Image 1 (cartoon, rainbow, N blue to C red):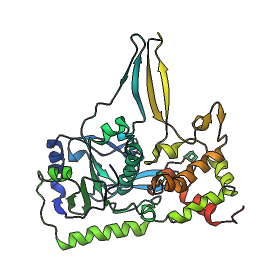
Image 2: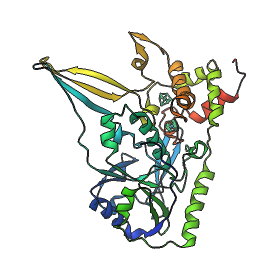
Image 3: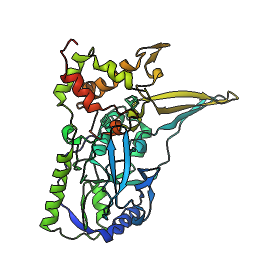
Image 4: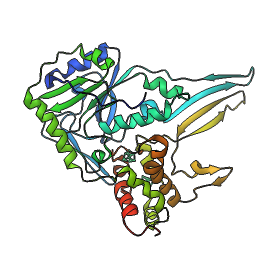
Length: 374
Ligand code: SF4
Ligand code: SF4
């Protein structure tokens, strides 16, 4: 599953009161539906069966180290940006058993996950791009990860354009948003009176055959386009161009790394919420009687001390070197390894950093302030 080409839109109109038709069409096609709901003060994806369970009239404020939901007067269901959870945990599980072993007789057996076909409603453009990056990593030719693949193949993705940007968003500068343009099965754009809906794959087309869409009015198509332009125009942050980010390699001794390290807690929140980070650790867990064992994979972070441990020696022994590794790898090294930067501009690492460290601002300071040998 490689990054797909930009999808041409041929939308139909679905009145807000008929959204249940779309949910029913998805369920009748064999999928459970995960949709956005409010839980623990944040937008999260949970199983839903009825459109009335969707979060309504809620938007969000996101800034460095700050996330709050706020009530709006409107009827819109997707007026928020994204919560802490992207698509990552749905394919790359935070914690899972990879295989189990028995001692007598000696045997090894893969433990593949049992996965239900799952539709995800309301996926944002930055997260579709991030999933394409994860696909490239976990499904590369000759080395596909069977656990990831098993989950990924069961997903139906319903993407939606962002009509607004949060203060932490910068997807316009990475070229990943704010409108969905690739990687979805069904695309949507929310208008005041309903939705424009179109298919992005054969799977999506089969679902939409169960839904009565009408021909949209010209004004509705214009509203779809102007909302996207407005969302892009609202973005206050931006990232330098990919070729400029390669200059990070020339800035490894910049004084600002230490200033960031003095604030950074090394907590790893940024890598946990990042939809593209894919580092993990594996543990061999032996049963108490010594007769069996299981190999367990769990998310790891370049901020954990153990992640850079080799033969008992910590290659990156302090927070400065761990933050520098994270930023230079994501913004420069990935270009050499993956053909693009490892950031889709979602801004989660800014919002969910407890001390408000800001990838865009720290990068700008390191790239553009001070001389090269500083
Ligand atoms: S590095 Fe930050 S802004 Fe970029 S994709 Fe990861 S969490 Fe989002
Ligand atoms: S940058 Fe922020 S979120 Fe990331 S490890 Fe440091 S304190 Fe934690």
